[in-house]
Image (cartoon, rainbow, N blue to C red; front, side, top):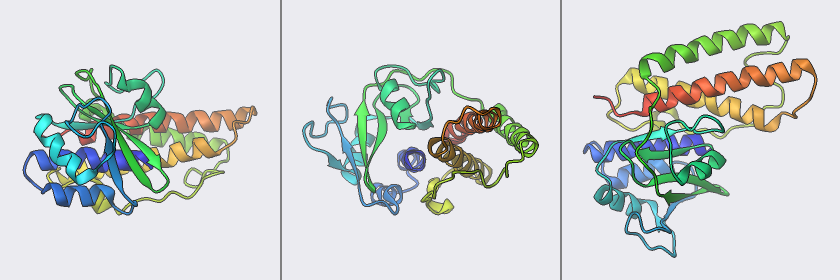
Amino acid sequence: MEILAALRLGTHLNAVRHGLVSVEVAARAVVGSDTAHHVSDPHGLLGLDRDHATALETAMAAIGLFVDDDWVVLLPRAGAPSGLRGPALAAAIDAGAATAPVGGGPVLVPIPVGRAVQWLALPGERLGPLPDPGEAEPALSQAVLAATAALAELDVPAGRPTGRAPVRADADDVLVAPGYPVRQRQRAVRAAHLLTACSTVLATTPDFSQPDAEAHRRVLRQVRDAAADALTAATRWPG
């Protein structure tokens, strides 16, 4: 899933920047169980080959030279840009995820290619207001509680929604890079799993017009949106 790839890349770019892991170790963690990751730099934002994709490890070394800023994971959707502005927004909405430097610069958008990922580097502006960690986590918990009650009223099992497709997830211990406090790591992983589950169900469940079906989808969208904000908040570098 692009969401998990963005989580791995964004947090590991921060860990590299703050000297907690090497580029080599970070690149391996980001690739995880995928076949390979490459970076496409058509605008020359990272000084990479404009015509050919570059292996992630080489690209991450270049990113460290061109971007001196902390990174954050963004989950933009229509009507909710998640702080992202500029020409990268449309591509990030299509992909469902992106990672970007807080102060502006190249936005990295994950494009799945089978079991591989090609990151597209696009121009980005300084990010707009980001979700506040102190507000996003309680809002997610409230959304989950409300969803559980609503789904019970609709007689839909909250933990096993109809139409769910299998999700290939990575081990939790490599989703978030070293350097994040334990509680913040737990919040990021929780939000990522909820976001992935809700997005998968919404993408694989037919959009029926029956009132109960639409109510079910509305509840899932509310949890998805709250999880997106919580994930962005949890991936901001501490301090």
